[in-house]
Length: 285
Ligand code: CAA
Image (tube, rainbow, N blue to C red; front, top):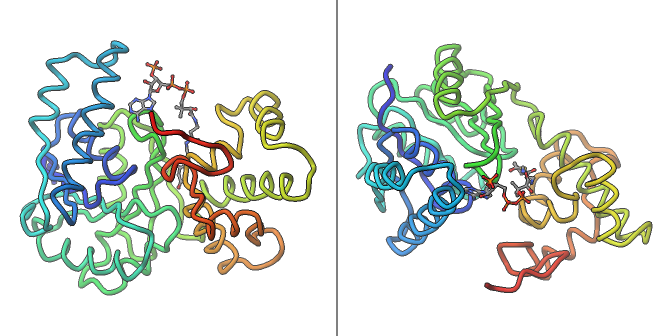
């Protein structure tokens, strides 16, 4: 199927980044948010991020205007009916995602590919209640979406080869690199990344080092672009905890037990960059 129309559900950090790259690469995009104010906020973020690309010479002003002209918003999936690809980026709760996928199945073009940007929920579970689970697939973008090259593609138990090949080809059209994983807890990216972040938080909790030195050690010693504590704040501490809980539930054992300090930060509402405070402080500009 020739994919030209894309529906992105959810306009938060990941959803607006996903809508951004599809619009920039020539697709007609409808971004669906529950409320118009949230949709407008997502478009304002996309515009700001595109302005930044224009200022840095990565995008022309004319291409930015054309991309924004291809981007529409809606407050229901029905308004986006006829899309050939959907990418869902709503909160990480199976009940919410299941409801969204039922709507997507009802309103997509025949044979539309239905992708989820989940960072850890099983694709097989998300697809379970649909008439045709073979079209459901994980399309896991990395934050910040316009910058990061990887899309981790996750095959659920019933995902078809055709859906996998379609999504791989689309990823290349977006200027990104696909890598495929099977549907195990945390897939590959978060099964490897999150225990490292959790271990860094344990180092802080146990007094092995300060957060600044933990980050310096990992940033300069291992050539990571960000230290793990700063990265946890960037991803969102609630997201990190939710992923550790999926790993803990899926595999058990001490290796995947979320650090108490991570639990406490989330319970205190310190979620990282998005809440203005996490392990570090992020004063509003
Ligand atoms: N939109 C568009 N462009 C953006 C952007 C955005 N949202 N954010 C950053 N950029 C651009 C900047 O304009 C800049 O462009 P140039 O190279 O043309 O100058 C470039 O990205 C680098 O940004 P900065 O100069 O502001 O800052 P930096 O060099 O410190 O890089 C960073 C910032 C890209 C975030 C870098 O620190 C990095 O790569 N960090 C690691 C990010 C990471 O690991 N992401 C994965 C998280 S895990 C995940 O997402 C999945 C999950 O399930 C949890």
